Length: 475
Image 1 (tube, rainbow, N blue to C red):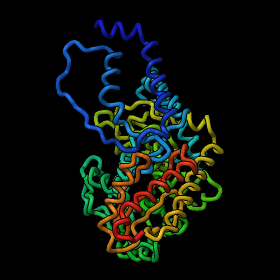
Image 2: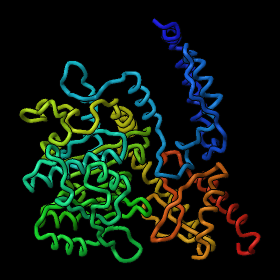
Image 3: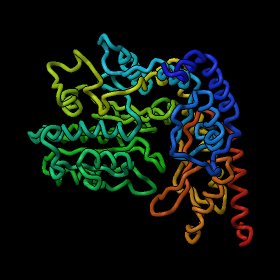
Image 4: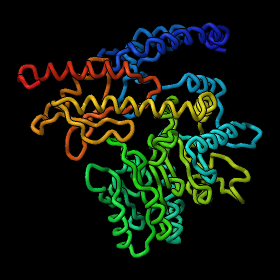
């Protein structure tokens, strides 16, 4: 055995203790750690022939990279809808690495970790008040979840047209897709599926300050298809203003027309955890598929998305994702293997951090997380509304605040304002465009965020506004 491997194996307890101590120090100082990195890092393309062992590798990491690791899992990192990591989720993720299972079958001799994954899906359905007729599994995030769901939708369209797109290839002209405000990950999925990122028909949004689809316009577009099958991509929480499509109205349309209904509920799904906000997802149980992103509001580590697809589509799903050299015989649920239900052939036990967190905190725990985040978003939104230099671009419907500088002629200064806010290292937000206006977006999904973090954010924004306008005597 290699000397370094042998030594590391013998010193495993010491090494893991070092990692534990360093990890705890990071977590305990998370609120004070910068949210923005402004450090030059020297990199190398030369690999040491002999290696240096884990202790020295850790030292190199700490010397060169650790200081540039931003507090993206912290309470004031409000960019990209980035969640945190609960203690239970960290425990589950650590153990997923230690046990290193390739999660596939629920009843094979080589590995039974899929039992944990299937149980976790049932717990997640229960948390979200969804029926048990959804199959589910874990992928890397919302992009691969949308890819998985829309892959099945593509196969569904083919079957209605007496075609097998999985075997014969895609005919984009045969696939009609409607959506009002699709997330970029859905558009990317259309590209990867061979349908084409521009091959969808945009439905009008509801009049007023809304991003939800207009049901009347959708129905008019359906009529124009003259009975042809189509795919509907709808939203449970748009990325800028967290708007929700009218799922009850869509469900009524589904009773009249033949279409595959997919909901992108990457983070909006967790409105279902709160009695105050669960009405936003009324009717979503009738969808054919749903995307969930657990590394957002569920607060588990990154690379943890979930697809939910109605069990009635199981054969279409297997036709889409089974290995071509291993055709499935009989009922795929009798000899269940995730190998035949999702894109990856090899996967780690992504379900374990979700399982730990759900078991540890239960329904009330996630109700508290969701409602606290919404409360913090509303507090920050109230501050924005009160500033004469700022404009809240949409109501704070759930957990995202979208705002800009008040005067149209000040659009050129929005990016500068954001860069200065982020450069403080005390808060991080991201740029966006909403209804043609350059804007700033703050997304609240971290379980750690408290009113003291809102106070810090308010202080930073006020300071940067004063700096920006002091010379113009406008603030």
